[in-house]
Image (cartoon, rainbow, N blue to C red; front, top):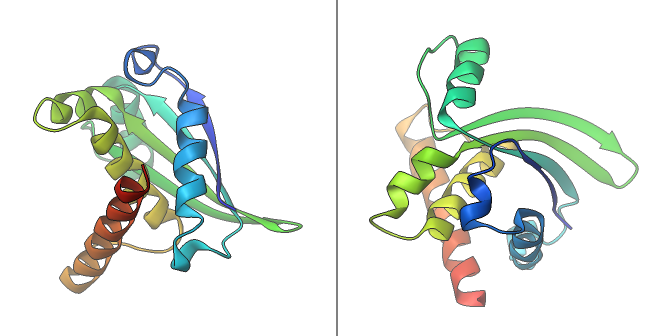
Length: 148
């Protein structure tokens, strides 16, 4: 089973997702049925924050003084049957802006999935790696949207 701990660091998130813990719990239950993720016992945290905090984190950890949509901080901590894989931070303003053209939940799902894939070892530094990661993201999104 995959579990997320949600930390609300910016109140505007509640305008779109009333109970983010419950929302992610439902999504992760679906994800746990995807063949690739069936036997994963992962846990991670998601900080729901704003552009100001994202810029601060990006500067502190990546030496880039700009805001960004999602940041991932991989770590591996084994505890009995669960592997804690790290932390994700997501910017409300960027998700909100993108959702004008699409849907807030879709944009949010794209970001936490992207962040989670980084936590479990995917990256997009090389073009081939980018293609693999994007393919996995699309597969997961398709699965999540077909299960709703």
